[in-house]
Every structure is written in C-alpha cells, then in structure tokens.
Amino acid sequence: MTTIIEHGSDEPSVIRIGGAEGDEVSLKIYQDMYHQITGKTEEIRKNYKDSFLIEFGDIEQLHIKITQLLDIHNVIGNNFTASIYYEEERKEQYSSFEKFRLFNSNSTSPVSNIVLKYNVSIIPAKLKQPQEYSVTIRLSSRMAQLRELKKNAPPFMQHSFFTMIVSETAEIRVEYADYIIARGFIEAFNEWMDGCNKTIENTQIKWAQRYSVFIPPIGKIMIASLYGYFIYMAVEPIVGETPTLIVFSKYLVLSSLLFFLAISISNMVFRLLERTIDNHTFSSWIKLNKGDEKAISELSVDKKKGFIYFSLSLFGAISVGVIATQISNLIDSLIERIKGVRLKFPH
Image (cartoon, rainbow, N blue to C red; front, side, top):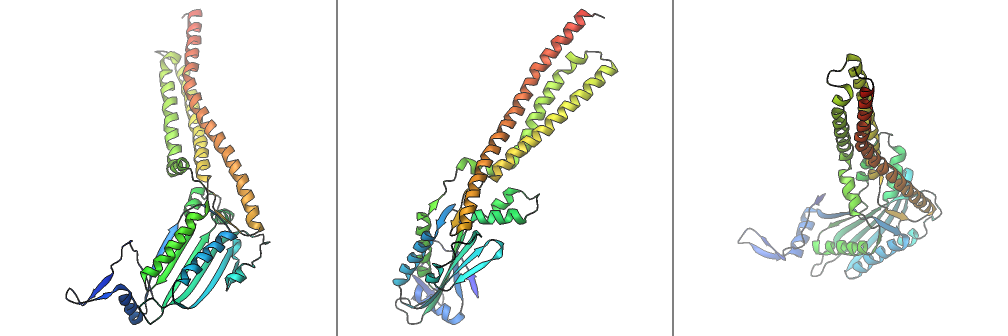
C-alpha cells in the first residue's frame, strides 16, 4: 500500500515517540521501524511542464546521474526497466540500459512516452535492514501526443483542450522509506532537467492563450457598438424628420442587413484569431527514431502555416475595425448627396 504525501524542504531530525514525555529517536530509525512494521512506503512526486527537446544522449546522461547517485549508497540489489510507448499504443520494453541502447532507431512511429524505472534495495547508514526504493521517471513528447489526439478526436473538439491535456511533459515519482535518500533522486532529476535543451516560451503568447476565449465576444461588442452608433446617427439625415413608410422600410431593411453582416463577419474573423492563438503549441519533443524526425519536420511546417493564419486573422480583425470607422465617412457623403437632391428637387 502506498501513501502519497507532499514534503517541504525542511524535515525534523528527530521524532518523539510516546507523546510529549516519550523518547526521541532519529528520523531514519523511525522511518525504518514504520516501514518494517506496516510494510507501507511513502511517495513523493513532482511534475514538470517544461518544453524540452530531448535526444538519446540526454536520456543517457540522466541514467548516468541516477547511477552515480546510487554509487554513494550501500546498494545490495537493483533492477532497471525502460519502456518506450509509440503512437497507436505500441510498446517496447528493455530490461537493461545496454539493451535500451539497441532500440530500433529506424522505426517510423513517433515516440509518445519513455518510462525509466529503477527498483533498488538500500541499507542506509546506521541501519542493518535494507529498504526498498522505486524511482519512476516518465518523459512525454507533447508533439507526438498532440498528433495522436488530433487523429482520434472529433472535429468539433477545440485545440485548447488538447493543449491542456498534454501540458505535462515529465514526471518523477519516488516510493521510499527514507525521505532524505528520496530527495536526492528528485534533486538529481531537477539538475538534469535544468541542463536539457528547451524551447523559449513567449510569455505574451501564453498570456494571450489564457484570455483568448474573450476575443470573439469583446470583438463583436465593439463592432456592434460602432455599427449601431453609425446607423443611429444616420436615421434623421437619411430618412428625414417625417419619413414615408417606404423610405423608412428601405432604411430599416438596409441597416439591419448591414448590421447582421458586420456582426457575422466580425464573429468569423475574431474566432479565427482566437483559434489561431490557441493552436500555437510550444515545441516539446523526444527524438529517437526516423518517425520523430519526420514529425518534427511536419511540426515546423505547421508552425509556419500557423504564423500565416495568425497574420491573416489579425489583418482581418484590423480591417473589420477600419471598415466600421469608415462607415461614418460613407454616411456623411450619403447625407451630402441627399441634401443636394433635395435642393435640386424641392417639394
């Protein structure tokens, strides 16, 4: 049975057993007693959302770090497994890192996840009984997961939902009896993550993605306000103070049509702008085989298309606003023509 707990950076050095008047024992001895009596282990887990760019050499460096960390402990037994998960739920598993090095790099299926698992028996200092530790490291390719989600998801599913699902790119989970030893694995993985190549994430794009859902409603309100104001100001000059039913009906039909077209066009433009912003995904991938290389090339092409769509949608949004402001000039010229006609043909 496993209990998941969260720890801060400070841990007590001693534990008092038997209440306020009880005996003090070291944290190591208390944890060993707890583990021996109950058979339970505790778990510490940390998730990451870094947009990393990982190749096999980086994974090899991670394995070396974990191995070096184990060398400082009295390890009496250990085993290792590496699992590679590809698109379409295909999996390969290796029982040693030497065998893992011989994986098929010519595979055409992109790698979705890599899971490294270390099971270790350690005899801590000042203790005689071994303690069991399990270190599980999961690395996820955001690029491959997005590809798979897009293939299997219904067409009405929004891209922002996909981005939220694949936000986490790495996780380390340690089942332990001694927190001090477990924290060493976490710190080693943190150090490795800091040294990985990563995509520089634009904070402005991340801010825009957080609030992009408000772009269509705010855009429609602005355009509706502008068109409504211009149409209202044009009522008296165009139809006159005492309009006939025919003149008023024509104006009502024309103004309603223009208003409907303005709202519809602005809604399409602003939704396209929202979708373009949401579709931007910060590159995070694992490159181990030919399939990964091909998927990365496709991702580069998609990013170029995304930039073009963003430019067009932004230009469209600006154009809608400019057209709305230019309607006032059109109304003024129309008023001048109407006045000229009235002067030429007085009642």
